[in-house]
Amino acid sequence: MLKVPEHQVAGHLAIDGKLGPLVDDSGRFYKPLQGDGRGHKELAFYESFSSDTRVPEHIRKYFPVCYGSQLLEASNGSGLLHHLVLQDIVSSHRNPSIMDVKIGSRTWYPEASDNYIQKCLEKDRRTTTVSLGFRIAGLQLYEGKESGYWRPGRREVQSFTVYNVRSILRRFVSSNSSIGNESSDCSFAPSIYGGSAGILEQLLELKAWFEDQTIYHFHSCSLLILFDKESVSKGSTPVPVIKLIDFAHVVEGKGVIDHNFLGGLCSLIKFVSEVLSDSKESLIKDCVESEKPGICTDNGNCQQS
Amino acid sequence: MLKVPEHQVAGHLAIDGKLGPLVDDSGRFYKPLQGDGRGHKELAFYESFSSDTRVPEHIRKYFPVCYGSQLLEASNGSGLLHHLVLQDIVSSHRNPSIMDVKIGSRTWYPEASDNYIQKCLEKDRRTTTVSLGFRIAGLQLYEGKESGYWRPGRREVQSFTVYNVRSILRRFVSSNSSIGNESSDCSFAPSIYGGSAGILEQLLELKAWFEDQTIYHFHSCSLLILFDKESVSKGSTPVPVIKLIDFAHVVEGKGVIDHNFLGGLCSLIKFVSEVLSDSKESLIKDCVESEKPGICTDNGNCQQS
Image (cartoon, rainbow over all chains, first blue to last red):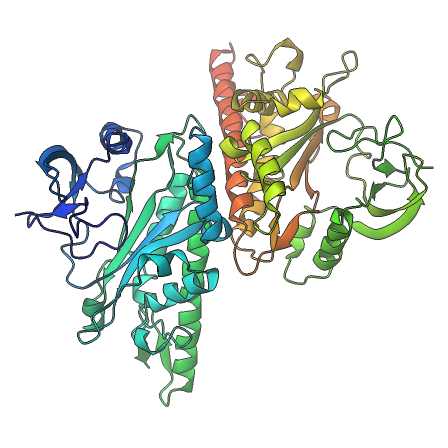
């Protein structure tokens, strides 16, 4: 039984008779192959990637599993269409907070047509792509049972400034997201951004690979970053997930590192580490100011001594 | 007594009645302030940089010392003109091999005019700037007393491909540069690229700063990389020099890292480390194949056991 994904934050949506991806109950994500060759390029990437022995095992976990392609009824009613069959990254999470972050200070690649380059360049300049080396392409933040999700519309997302991005990276790991960006408490930062399995460590592991790998250049790719806020609120520490997605514009690296992706990744890492160190500082302050001074543990608790 | 610099490898030359930088015998380099505001922007950068306490001491050595500005007779005979007075990095070297490497996969900055951006973008795409994240903007390689310097012309430099750049990075540290790129022996790589004071370690020190600093964005800056080949040939190990130069397009970082410079720097680091590891491998091979197998020392000697 195929259905429209509940938690898709960017890209074409399979609603109102439009073409978009579908999911099933077994944890698979069906992405229609785009007609202009992009779909086949993405399928070719997955095939090449899955059999490439140069990709280290510890890096494969950052990519969705691909199960090939399959003919399915398209969501827009146009009949049978080839779909890429991928691991559904999101559905196993109950109330996921998700960011789709498109990495790189340019989304175009040298081999593209002049028209395509100009179109991308304009959007890269209009968004934070050029200034930050990445842009938020979509997001949803779970804000609790009553308020549900904050899911800004496409136009709002495209108008995010550097200031907005910084606020969102704080709000993403805050318990008090509804009371305004300035006062986000970042109380989940130590357990979600920090820690040995946290976002920062995962980004650093990816960075080390990108400093070395010269196999692929990932143009216009996104990092999907997600975690389940409710389980953090309940005291458990879920492992936050990072996956690279959207490989329609991957080209061969030809012996050169993907400096465009790497630069943007380093910029994101700097932002995330700043939120993390700010949250640790305010935790120390809280500990010092509390009546029973304690020790701030790595996962953000104030352990009373 | 002012004169035209002997070892200038890029930029405007003060010859044939044209405007260009001059040097004196006391180790100072006089760069005419360009009339369109760029000269004043570069002077302003040096002033801001020299007094900025956020710049760590170990990073300052990568920048030329600036002694302010001075009114001097311009080299094109147009009369008195303000010149930036800088440390002359090159003149103290007897026969320097020099590369001027412009870092970044774009040389334009978001605040520039559309015309300027299009002009830069075209050149960035025509050269290796977009593909490699850096381009060689000029060079001279000392090839010995008889053959003197190899100093390709501007047009040749601007047409360098990725393949050419890789060859030049090998030839830069080879003793047999005149016999063709393919067979460059890279025999100086361990002592010039490698070692605790070598090019690679210096680049890595700069990289660590660029991963963190959000003060400046260095658009269209170059790394000047130089060493004295003759002194290596004679058995001494000179400390190779790296300096950042050309700051007419530096803008404020506003809390964001210079991901454009950092990405290009990482790409250059990857190229340099490849030359270094290739040279070590061939050294091990030579040791193994020699009649008296020895130990390959870090500075590239085959120490007989």
